[in-house]
Length: 316
Length: 322
Image 1 (tube, rainbow over the protein chains, first blue to last red):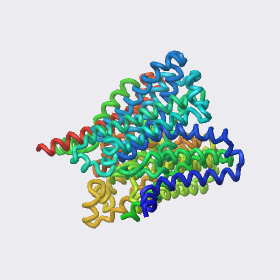
Image 2 (cartoon, chains in turn red, purple; image 1 turned 180 degrees about the vertical axis):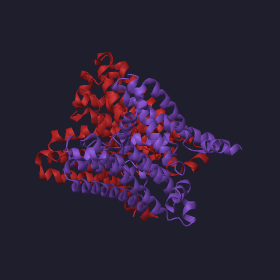
Image 3 (spheres, each protein chain N blue to C red; image 1 turned 45 degrees about the horizontal axis):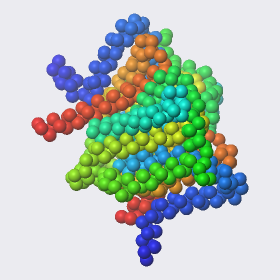
Image 4 (cartoon, rainbow over the protein chains, first blue to last red; image 1 turned 30 degrees about the horizontal axis):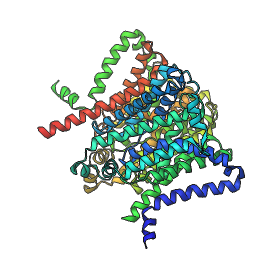
């Protein structure tokens, strides 16, 4: 009886993980090299970057918004971390905090315009994305970034105790995100606002501030992901975050977080990040053209949103 | 005179009209040739692609929705027509019609999902944007295609010895059709659903049908935009439509249509498109490097929406007090 209740409560989560596992099993049978230890490490590193961007994206989507500015926040963070102070290990002591403060600031600007000035999230964050893209292109005059520092390369490519550094970092941030969502006041306020912001306002929650900070968090995780991505790739270039825009949203959607806001779980987004990486691996293994990948993104998001909508209908 | 003044002050497009006049004066000062008919024809031709995209988006914004998939539809129809069109009038008409049907189908899918499952429009059209863009990549993996030159010359034909281009007619036709359409039952219903869909429903408006109409109209106009882009640019691109969503939103908002729905219209949008195009021309005249144009596009979008939202907040405050 109790098991049944737990299953019902975490149905979404269990389904997301089952989907990832099933996909993985299917492709492993088809391509035996897919399940080798080394390849799993590569997949995990790929998932870690998507997963870290998805932390902030989950927060924002729980409030009923969306953040379309992560793409160029990631690019800006990656370009800056490889260029500031020559991009060496010593320069990172001041460049990393500076970059994170900057991306949080951009996120807060998004959030302030959305919460206090009632701009639609999709237009505001898309506009911010274009501004960041234009600003970065104008400042760099289109020149590519440079190579990542040794420390970043270690964090992005090497392993500690047999597990990639990126997974350790992702794990740490997953714990922090889960604590914030389910053990702290801020998390409860996020869900309350997503469910009904008017009621949340009457219950004494500072709705605007909570929404503003959710975009701030999204800026923070996007900046962090950009820095780590530079290490994983070994260098930086303009537009390196573009793919992560849709991947992070798809990860959240697959993970069962409602696009209407009010319900969700970051652990679902973790499963979503794995699913996306495995799917990308499958598409690459099958040698399908880029168009199929793009269509697949659209179909995945549409499918998971439709499934979530049906569930809401059934529960009524 | 007072009547004209009142009408102007009440018009949601008043900011756009003022901007239009100011920018026109600035353009003429910077570039004295800008009053010639050949210049105006050229600019009108360059603006029609955005005009169609923005008109489609206006229908959806009027009912309080949003349609990101226009970017996908423009890329798709642009690629499709650039690849499959043959140098034969029948083929040109047929391919254009197929494109319009594709746009209508995409709009119908959007409308159906939004009506049936009550999912927010932004996420549905976000997904269909990628699906459309993906199909465009499958049809045409790289910029190119083979556009018959007869198609280009047909859509950029000038009447009266090169005096009047088709593009100017298209602007006028759109304006005249809108003047008629906004007084029809469907036109009035668009505004009713946008201001308060519950009240509209209680008054017997078939809300799902109106929403469906808006999304199909948006798809059809996006398809027209893609086909026109094929003719003017004489090439296809799987990413040809990517920037049109934000440009269209900027044009519509400058034109005075509210993103929350129920207020605005196509006359404002038409002027908004012209204003947007003039701003980018002035940047060129002023010698701004092309590296900065993306930044200005983004700033323009955010500032236009910001002003619209803030003035709406101020208006609501005034109503509360008054």
